Image (cartoon, rainbow, N blue to C red; front, side):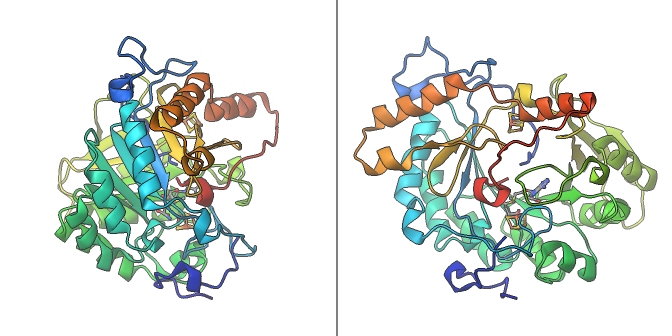
Length: 383
Ligand code: SAM
Ligand code: SF4
Ligand code: SF4
């Protein structure tokens, strides 16, 4: 077993195997500074703008979560020279911002394994038009990285944590890593001003569904905004099945049975992040007004609001978490293409976009049909 606290991905034993984090605000993407013409808004075939960008900075991970990269497989990682450099990432990010992107989130693999990540954060934070710069991490290296990341311009952090019990957490993360360092990482992020810290909890029936109230109480007590996430059929390795999905509505009901909640107004009719807030009054529990939510990616998909592009660590643009084929941007980048040429490639791809995988899955589930489709693995595209 490798040491998950090592921040040298090259030094790891290479035995390898989205969140959605909720819908993005309704798209008002415009061609902005892109030179494509303000009268020519960039929307896809379903009328969705391009508002946010997830950038995977590395495909490696120090965990082997059962729902993402199960430990019983060997994985091939990209050689270092195939990863986009920070300069390449920043150049592409600037072009995406010119096409309408306001929000950037760094992910992976485990993004904190990427050497000198604060240097990239600084480059991205300095791009005019980036209103939100966030990071999703398993938290293993957060205790020491929170301060330098915040100093470099990171605004927010989301930590993934599926259990508060060491034995269970160690089994889920696949490498036996305990809970306490993750909680210390969250505290370090709070001290660094990256508040409110969000915590993603993938809920699997029969695995950690009995812990949702405990997680909500303890993490809420620590002022974290918890986002419970329905177990998704990302990638091809996690042995997904409907029977393992606890619906977002059921998750919320269970939390509400232990901790009084009130629904928050939906930002849009189609908003399927079931957002609630605590009423408070529970001794040693979450403060009144703190948000808690559940993401219904499976049971109430929200493709109609999806304004998110994804860039893999090797420079492929994916327009859906579940897509297989990405558009290679590294070749033109390294082949001397101009900004205008690359921008045109991105814009053309976005205009042709018609992805609505989760809605199609729901339709298939409703009709009882099963079609296995090729999909990119989650650790490669980033959640
Ligand atoms: N390694 C980082 C982490 O775990 O936070 C960032 C990458 S991870 C792929 C991004 C998010 O995807 C995490 O919050 C993780 O829990 C979530 N995720 C991975 N597999 C999932 C699945 N099968 N269903 C739902 N969410 C999943
Ligand atoms: Fe690694 Fe994140 Fe996937 Fe877990 S969910 S294996 S921490 S990339
Ligand atoms: Fe998820 Fe793809 Fe639907 Fe977007 S289009 S919400 S990434 S399934």
